[in-house]
Amino acid sequence: MKKNVGGIDKILRIVIGAALITMVFVGPQTVYGWVGVVPLLTGLINFCPLYPIIGLNTCSTQSGDA
Image (cartoon, rainbow, N blue to C red; front, side, top):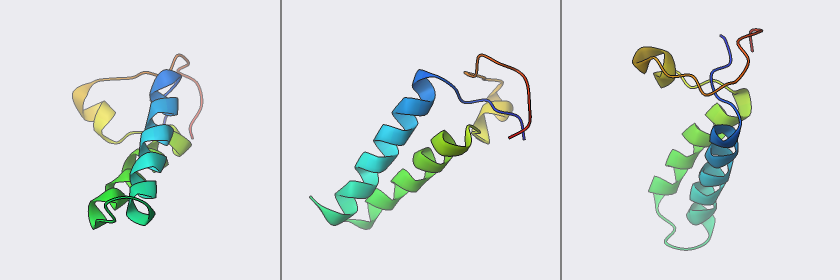
């Protein structure tokens, strides 16, 4: 699994994911906030399974498996 998420993309994923999960506990308290787990995890592991399908890579380095 090669890294394909990097830089600002990674930061945005973590922030948006954490914000959505926070909404489960504070705010509207709907289960839809758990959708935030997806961007949070993809930001933390630096890999988005959708990116290879659409041919996108935001990681500046091509080295290493995650």
